[in-house]
Image (tube, rainbow, N blue to C red):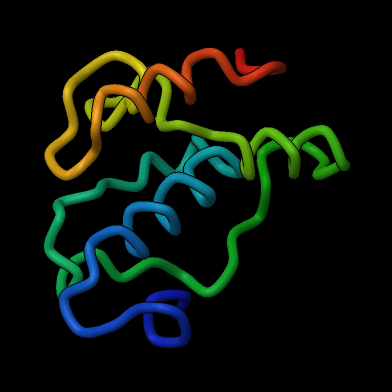
Amino acid sequence: MFMDVYGGPGDRSNSLREWRALSLAAPSLELKFTGNPAVDRYPFSVKPDRPVALPMLMEVMRDSYAGTQFDLTAQECPGHDSARRERVSRTPNRA
């Protein structure tokens, strides 16, 4: 649903962001990301595993995919320069 509103055809980055936000809200669902926007179709909403409060929303907005294969602070990312990655890793309040 998110991809239909904010993404373009074949836009992988929007489906990745949608996957991550839903995965942080409800990790028990064990949602998967394949990289194929036609396959990565997620529910409009999920029941969160814990109450959603402002700190959790801030965590989702700050997320850099830490602990996943897409971690922006731990690897070279095609299309992203290393200077940007360094700035992301030094951003205050990152877990």
